[in-house]
Length: 216
Image (cartoon, rainbow, N blue to C red; front, side):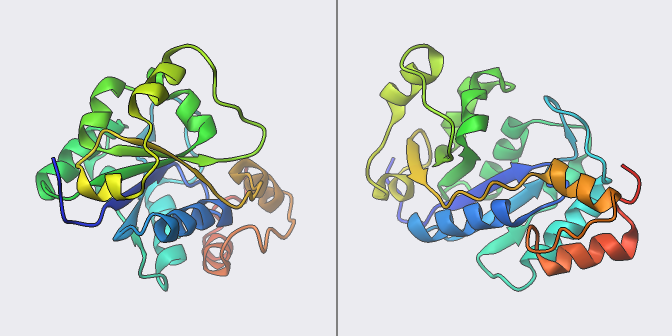
């Protein structure tokens, strides 16, 4: 199904807090894939990982602070507003209803992609979006199994594919490796250390002003 619209990137996560690794990944993929924009979507209640320390409202506010001066990146509050357990498929169905002709690209690191077959209704996800897997160090794609089969079936080499088709493709893209951990940032803040240069100054200011991670 050929389209003429630029694809929109989707980057989801707990963002507890959002840091420069998240933002650099979003911006590099925005540029290299010629995306229309990237929606950064904080989860309300993640299904498969430890619950966030910051509240949904605080995590959304930190994303809003971080992207306020970057028009390529959009703070999307749909999962916070929807509440309940967050499933990617629900978000994609909602976005497709709003934007039926716009291709989507779900942006994720290789670590997340390796666990993709465990996601809720994962086989349906590629009906709604492409998947863009960002290369990160220390991970290698398997040579056999579900992920290997999925890549063999869906891999695309040309960026034009994601703009000409609603979904269904998988692209592998290298990004600048920034080994930044939200867990380490929270620990540093709780210990009274300065995490500056690991996250945007606007986010650090919000954290200090609200005492977000004072007790960890």
